[in-house]
Length: 352
Image (cartoon, rainbow, N blue to C red; front, side, top):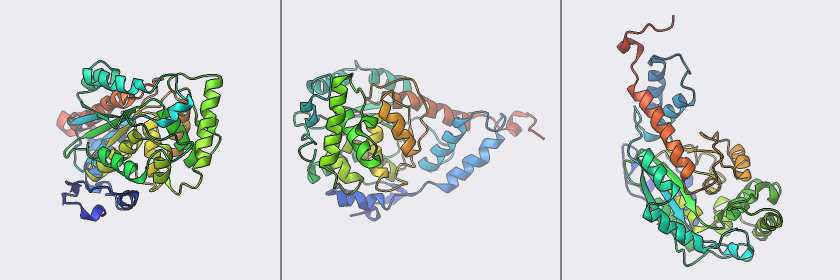
C-alpha cells in the first residue's frame, strides 16, 4: 500500500489509503504530493498588480501564495473550512502529571458537543464546521514510563481515524486536541526527537507547578529513557504519544494527500506534527502554526520546526482554539488577494 494506490483527479486524492501498520504511514510520507507551482506562480504574478505598495500586507501576501500552492488553484479561497478536536485519555496521568483528573476529558467532550466551550464560539466566528472525535476515552493508553503507550495496531487505527476526517474540497483544516495528560506526552515526544533536558520541554499544562512540575519533568525523562530505542518519529509517537496525537498526525497526512492546507494549534498538535517531520523533512510544508502557545516547550518546538506562528496571544487552552482564531487571518489573506482591484482595473497609477 502506498500513495501510488490513490485515485486522483487533477492531482487531488479522492480515496484515502487504509492504514494497517506504521510501515504504511512511512510509505505515504515518502511519496507526498508537492505544491502546485502553476497556482503558486499565478499568485506571485497577481500580487504585485494589486492596489498597494509591494509587501505592504506583510505575511498576508505570503499566506495567500501558500494557500494557492497547497490548494492547487488560483485564486485561493477560505470558505469551506473545518475545525477538528481529537480527544484521548492517557495512562501516564496515574503518575500525577496533571492538575485535573482524567474524567475531565469526557466532561469537556460533552461540553464541546453541547456548544459550551471556547472552541464552539471561535469556530462559529470563523465560519468553520466543528467536529469532535473522541478516541476510546474509557480505555486510556498505557503509562509510557512502563510500556509503549500504544500497540502498533492501536496507533495505526488512531492514525486512520484522523485521516478519515479530511473531506474532499475543503479549503483549510484546523486541528487541535483535548486530553488530560497530553502535555506530558507532547513534552516526551519533543524531548525524544530534539534532545536537551526534560525540563526544557515540560511546562505547567493544566496548571501544575513547584514540586508537581518537577515530578512531571521526571516522568518525561523516565519515559524517554525507557523508549530510547524508538527508531523514528512514528515509533516515538506510538511509544510516548496518545490516540489523539496519532489522529492529528493522520489528519495532517490526509490533508496533504487531498491538498488541504492545515492550521496547527498549540504544543500538543505541534508535537504530533513533529513526529511526521522527523520521518520526512517536508511533511509539514502544507501546515502553518496558528499561534505560539504560552506553554514554554512550544516556543522551543516552533524554533526547531522552523515555523513562525501567526499569533502570540498568550493562549494555552488547546482544543484548536488558537488555530481557529488564526483561521480568520487566512480568510483575510485570501479575500485581499482575490478581491482587491489591480492598478489597471482601479485606474490607479502604479509606481514608476
